[in-house]
Image 1: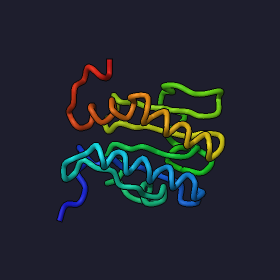
Image 2: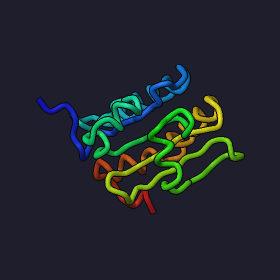
Image 3: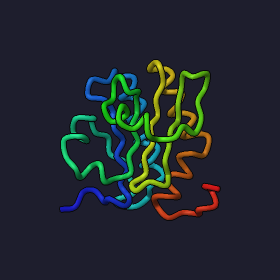
Image 4: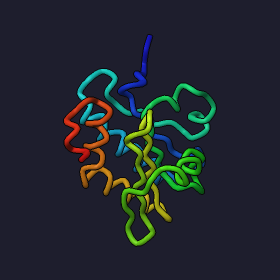
Length: 144
């Protein structure tokens, strides 16, 4: 039975050794995406970085890495290559590439609190909505 759809299921990746705070933030993001999904495969799943890097299938999905390069091996790979959309005081960062296939996002901070701030900015400043529009075929004008 098919459980994930490469075009619609978003993979949220956390570090395997991540603090409970980062994992809780990732789960809140997961819940927010699932609330907006409304269709069978339009949802998020949360996986550890080891599982994501251990196979090729998960890396074919739209990906959101939560946590910085020091705690998340996927973030360590993406931070140098994914453009920064905005940051706050060089402490909290939202990086995204909506043009890549699949899309890639990194939400991280210098501390667990600043990672939570990056996730909050991502969800409340329209970036998550724009990402979901891009992935799920919404109005592309939100990306302009």
